[in-house]
Length: 270
Image 1: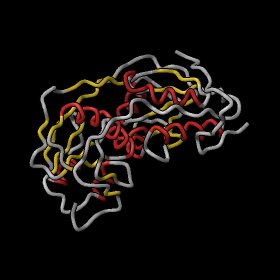
Image 2 (image 1 turned 30 degrees about the vertical axis):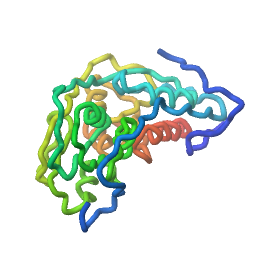
Image 3 (image 1 turned 135 degrees about the horizontal axis):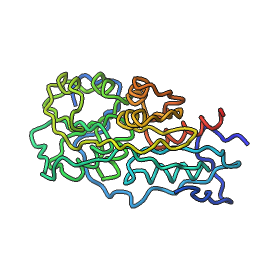
């Protein structure tokens, strides 16, 4: 039975299958969502996913996220009957434990879910926050921080094109060795939050690999991985193509639900 590409299908009579393996006058088009961010009570847990109809698709999905971050994605994939093959390809190392004082800035730009975690842990005197995409926005909200702006195009170029003007004083918080283009274009100050360390396991067997960052794409190609890929967004797709990987589907929404939906579409087309 073909599974709907809409993702979750309500089916109260069945349980999910078990895990089968180990501010300004001119604005762009993005969503200007509010003023100074507020902290609210974080969600205590990810919502349970409804089960799906039909038989499990028999598709092995390689998940490359760091072990500490892979859980929600793994759970959603397994709820659709996919066999998950864990293959963490990067580790995240913090650059500091010192507080990041954002006093005096009009905007703080956060470019990744890892950056969202570090901002929640270290930042004080938060100004308005811009998230590069819905995945980063979701991670911020998980920590009780509401972003004020999310571009419609989930990339640093999209954020730069749609960013509210005049932007005022901006702090750009990202990974170590982040691309300088957007930073220089905005005249922003830059703070490195973390560094990524590439791991080199043997590439596991699988039908499709899930790539949630450009770093994961580079690491997967480096170890010789050759499975078709599902990408979280245009930047990751671009990096994957540049290192010789084939992207079968790009997530329609650049978050966990979008990734799962792209895997479902891949399975339906097999």
